[in-house]
Length: 431
Ligand code: GKR
Ligand code: MG
Image (cartoon, rainbow, N blue to C red; front, side):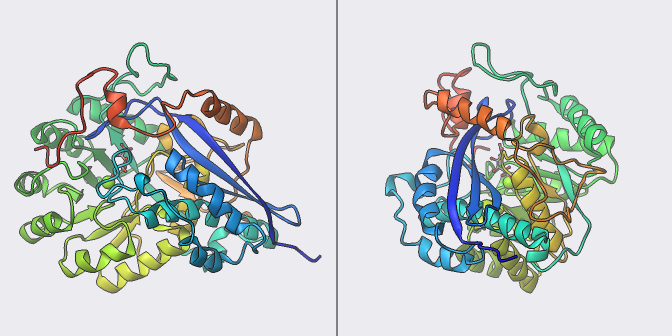
């Protein structure tokens, strides 16, 4: 049979996904978070799925970038990426500082484009795989493991969103002190079998977070532990935390903001440092690696520009003896499947990947991906191995359409102002 893998249509569907009230240094998660679902349809009727960030600034770019994909073969990703720079980015969308909504490092026009391209790339690979009868990992060179390990991503959390704020309910309860964090970790372990734990920090004064990690270490002896305050600490505070928790931490994630501060911390502690904030683009690698500022880079395949760039990042890390693993933000199952396929191909993946997926009670798939023993099995089905549930997609899209615009751009500080009208994103370093 002759296949025509020319892209005939790209469907872009923004959705709002329920999100629990998870606390971070910027504020609290909104009750609903925007994501963009991508469908790439080929001339022979094959449809591939992708997913990426869905805030307005990404949506504005998605249309013009999708137009560049139409008429191209799904296998011509290099051609698409080469042309992407011609698509203009509204400069008011680019902040010369840390991306306020997402804690994802410094925002640039390239990073915005790459985040959108990642959704298109994944959808093209899914379509290509479906058409060839090959899993996405095979298109990336083949898996080197049958399952990808994830860590439980623990958050300080309120029991529910503030009174008067429309939201879905969740059954995780509150976690606002060491006992609450341990209880949450226990639930994660029972439900999903996770054996390593990451706590999102930068919420309470460092001594409280040190106590929470100590409580985790006592409750789960020998389990790898991480603490990530998203750059909320000074160099001196970072060093104190490293000193206090050095015996139980697998790594400390972005204790201080930016490569110079991270390099200073790294030079004065033996605790490995990981980042998804100071190394977020290829251009940032040279300074960070030559200054030995980080020992583990957490790739977010969305803002790195997809699965092939993640493999390239892993190769650069290997050359420098730097570890690699995966960062996560609020996401659905298409992204978890994509992360799992690429992680399955990376040799020397020594740290369990991050995933917010257990926090998402909703998905656009006919069947949710499952964690077994804390890991996701690598699918050998054609493409990503997931199927779209059109009714679910329509429902979550309807929520986006019905929104008055207040939730279409993730803003954790604005969500916090529902309980604390004076709240502003704290200056960094906060402690
Ligand atoms: O979801 O609150 C959150 C996280 O803080 C997220 O925004 C970060 O990007 O998970 C991320 C991280 O590891 O820094
Ligand atoms: Mg992080």
